[in-house]
Image: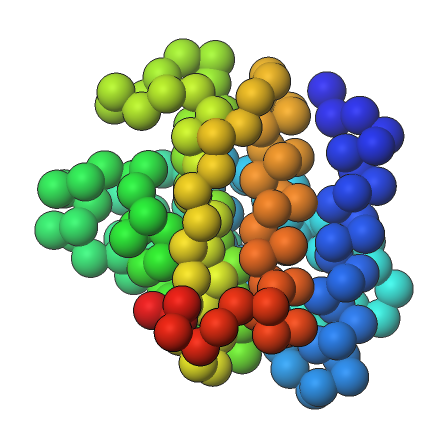
Length: 173
């Protein structure tokens, strides 16, 4: 179960991206695997989000990552769904399919069991935007709810860093 503090962290991070996007007149979409809609739900809780949020895809099944989000089948076949390049492909595909300026993506293992030799708590979050894409590997502790909530907070932080210029241009992919 997600704690109140975790929910507040995610809400704070969501507000930190929604308001600057609204000021810039830019839009946001999401592609979610392990978070299963939690990211979108967290974003739409923010007042004023309707001018920013385009929508998103929940692609929990591996085949939907390809057919709906546009992840190349050879990449999925070679590496599986829990992979940094898959996370980037999800974000880029969602950005294109949803017609958004920015797209966030989550993929990973929430547990309770490892998946395809990937440990519980291994998560990749990605952001794709006008100047490229970034991915971050996370090692999150806790149960399913904590891992999912942590992924939401961290992918929102990744976008906040992009929006506030925390990352040097050479870090863009």
